[in-house]
Image (tube, rainbow, N blue to C red; front, side, top):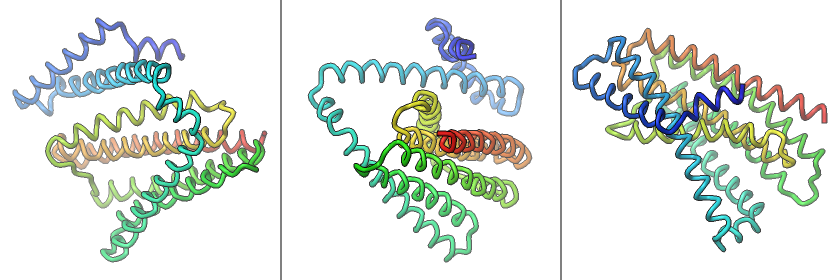
Length: 279
C-alpha cells in the first residue's frame, strides 16, 4: 500500500511536470471559456488538485534537502538542536496563548451577537488550548514514560470531544448556510498553505507514531486534526467563491468531507487511547 501511494503521489518528474502544465492549461481554458459547470471543468479541478498535491510533496522534499544541508553546515541549527526542548516548550506556550485569546474573543463575540457559529469555533480553540496545556505540563523534568502515556491518553480523549465540535460546525454549515470568505487572491495562498499543512501533518503522524517521546506523538496528532478541519474550511470557501455557493452541492460535499474527517479523527483518537492504556 505504501509503495502504491508513493508511485501515485511521487510520480516520475517528467510525468509530474506534464500533469502540472496540463492542469494549468485546462483551468485557464475553463475560466476563459466560462465552462465552470461542465464535465471538463470537474476534470480540470480534480487534475489540478492532484497536481497541487504532487507539487507540494516535491516542495517539501526540496525543503528537506535544504534543511539537511543547513543541519550539516549551520551553527544556528546546532544551537537549535541543543535547545530543542526549551524552544518546543516556548512554542507551545505561544501557540497556547494565541489560541486562548482567539477562543475568548470568539466566545465573547458569539455571546454578544448570539452566534452559534462563533461559539462553536470558540469551543474548538479552547479545546486546542486544553490539549496544549496538557502537553506543556509534560516538560517537567520528573516526567517519565508512564506519565507521558497518560498525557497521550488525555490527548486522545480531547480529540474525541473535538468530534462533537466538528459535528456542530457541519450542522451550522448545512442548516444555517454558514461559510468562509477570502477576498481576492488570498484564497490561493490559504489553499497552498492548507495543502502543505495537511500533507505535512499526515506525514508527521506516520513518521512519529512510534517515537520515544509520546508528547511529540500527541502534538503531531493534534496538528493532523487541525489540518483536516482547516481543509474542510477551505472547501467551504472554495465552493462559495468558485461554485456560486451552490447549496445542494456544498451540503453534499461538506457532509462527505465532515464524515471522513470525523472518522479519521475518531480512529486516531481511539488508537492512541488504546495504545496508552496498553502501555
